Amino acid sequence: MNVLFASQAIDGHFNPMTGVAMRLKEHGHDVRWYTGPVFRDKLQGLGIPLFPFRRATEHRADNLAELYPERARLKGPRAIGFDGEKIFASNVTNFFEDIRDLHRDFPFDVLVADSSMFIHRLVSHLLGKPVVNFVAIPNMESDPQVPPLFFGFLPPRNPVERALQAAAGLISDRVILRPAGQSYRRQHAAFGQEVPRGGRLTDEPYRCSDATIQTGPAQLDFPRRNANPKVRYVGALLPYRLPGATTDADAGAAGPGDGWPKGYSKTLVITQGTVDNADQDKLIIPALEAVKEMDALVIVATGGRGTTALQARYQQPNILVRDYVDFAKVFDFTDAFVTNGGFGGVQLSLSKGVPLVVSGINEGKSDVNARVEYAGVGINLRTEAPKPADLAKAVETVLSDPGWKSRARSMQQELNTRDPADAAAAVVESVLAPGAG
Picture 1: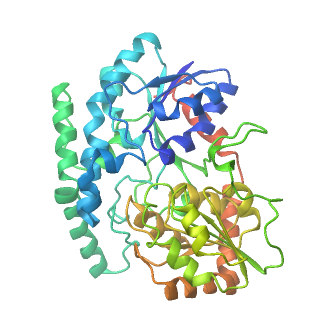
Picture 2: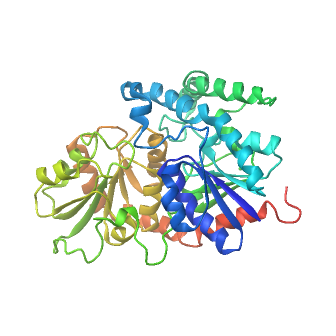
Picture 3: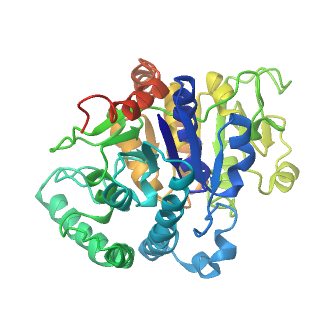
């Protein structure tokens, strides 16, 4: 069958989908991809034809400041609301019209759509095509037992917490996400599509899809009262790597055999991700200050920003600073991972049984980190700018208490019980199986 993948031009959305696409190719399906031109070379390397954005704005990690200079001044709920409207909701019409046009050249049988594109209703209703919703972040579907998004809450334990979270949910729906929701409804009205009242904007991809591929294990989600039978947790979907090929991260990356210093009792890995990594005073520098004197090899991945300056500042023999790190290799001998909470990195860490220290709020990281805390596989510092003393205490706790490692290894066993790419490919194939739908 003809399978069209569609994703934002953002690494954390695109990369987890590549393994599924390649597995479907191996199964004999004609797979093509609609996304930003930034991924042209990657897709060419995978042998997957690209349909580049034409009307749609290409939002990338490295161009958001240029596109929206005012974004840098926004914090907390205002930043979330801005991103919801400008980065996600604003492109819905452009995405759909691009896809409608390319359908003439590639009459796809099923669309595998990044949940954050919010095109599921239009493609399903106006093109009459099956849609598989791909969620590269924690489960966004609302549920009476699940805290509202963006606040980093844990499930409520008493009436006071339930009341607080209910109020926060109203603020999220009626204030924070209101501009995005209004934009979404206006664009659908232009196509004659009425969006039902009730539920949240983030429920729409789940409502309007034939199936949902949810990355991560169910054990890393909160308990739910209403289990959606269309949602399939497939485990840690990691970026596809051609056998024997190098990746962007391999250029100057740390990996076994790199000749780094030996003889340290522990290995720590630190990163601030690839999006919110311009200000290293948020996490990387406080983390280095916290652990630089420890008997540990400290490996830092900067994401390509400020590497030279950081190397000059921290010349201790136990500190290794790189633009990129081959996490899949390094985590094989890592004792703790310090991160701001990117969902892909968290899953990769747990797939290797590595416990975490997480500290981040923006870009939905507070919700990722709350799940890490709830699952007992890491310590959540619940701040965007942790103090070195707090980071040192958290790292020492994770290293000294074997319970953290034990729970992370239990999650590792769950993640490694099946092939995530196989499981996800089966979801896509199931929507066109006899009797599907």
